[in-house]
Image (cartoon, rainbow, N blue to C red; front, side):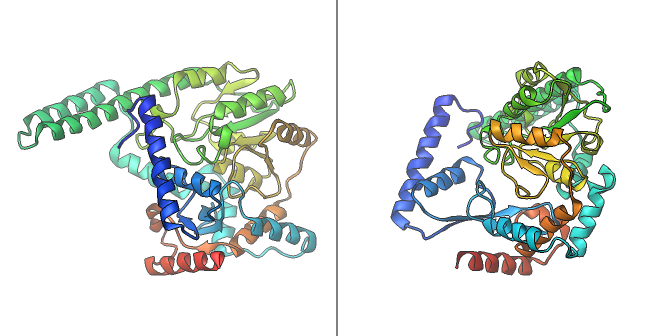
Length: 398
């Protein structure tokens, strides 16, 4: 069942059916543990995860990091890794003067993050941009409508297909083309709100994230509604500060279904908030990080990029770098007030502490990949990857 075009009642019924199904599965099989590849974030696996939490059934999942080829295991994405948290705290207390030793891959990663955005662009974005070159961008309204007409003619002339199959084909094509038109309209509206910004005034850089994605739902918790993060900041930053909000570079691309998550009203709401200005997509995240008082994100890569480049980060959700020094976890109003107060007083970033965090993450991570896309990085062979992941799960759950 595809729920994206269903009514509210259909969606609630779908949710109830998932809860009933998975509760039956758990009660019948009584598993000792439920293992996830990554944070559960679609309807069926999140329903299972929530039930496991309620029924006290242990879960385990991988947390993918930005360090090339490294991921670590956690019991839940909300709680993160207590092992890494404790080891990092001990390392900072005991080994302040000890030299940080990193693998060549991680050392290169940190070095690239200190250069230009072109040097540091994440692997997955490079792959998406390469795909974009082959498939093209959203395109104009006329070409989109022309493609829709071609699909209709193709379905009409294909007499070998029965009516239901042709109808289903046209239904999918229609929503795909309408999605592209809506994205085009959203992009035009965003561009109409965005203006060049003054980087010489005090400001917090807010990096919006692609939606729908697990990085906002469920990793953002309540701040999966990203306007809440911006609203809180607009009410708490000093009067003479600005809040510069920039949309993610991928949000309006053909590989991202922006129309399912964001709307014209969403951008209007943000633009109307006090002290908030929308930033053109031509600015890179590094342009905005380097002159900012701090960056703010739900759970995006921007937070990690910020501390590596010497700027504090406000993290409103859950991410692999939660516990790194220089990252302020801001799940409440009080958290946010304290963070802004510290940043206003000039909170310094100690790069050695950031490197130490990377070293600790390396030492408690498994080398490999947990998605087909990352197989393209050629980190390890398929066989070695399977062995590494299986061994990690066995050791973590023993």
